[in-house]
Image (tube, rainbow, N blue to C red; front, side):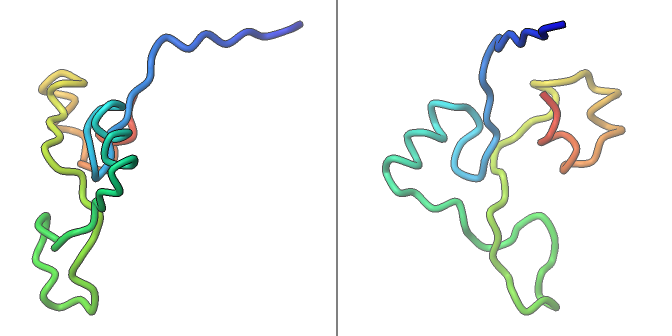
Length: 79
């Protein structure tokens, strides 16, 4: 049996943009997503910069109950 796949859209939530167009524009422009860590206190760590996703709102992708249950890493990997 031959299986078929249908791509119905593209999405991207990255440190340089929260959609495909913004991400692609940042890549073409050479924009870095790295910056100081803001999601937690990194004072006790040897490295204090990361590529955090900025401006992401899980409520744009799932209902409030599911967003509250999910941690930020899980929210960024859901389609």
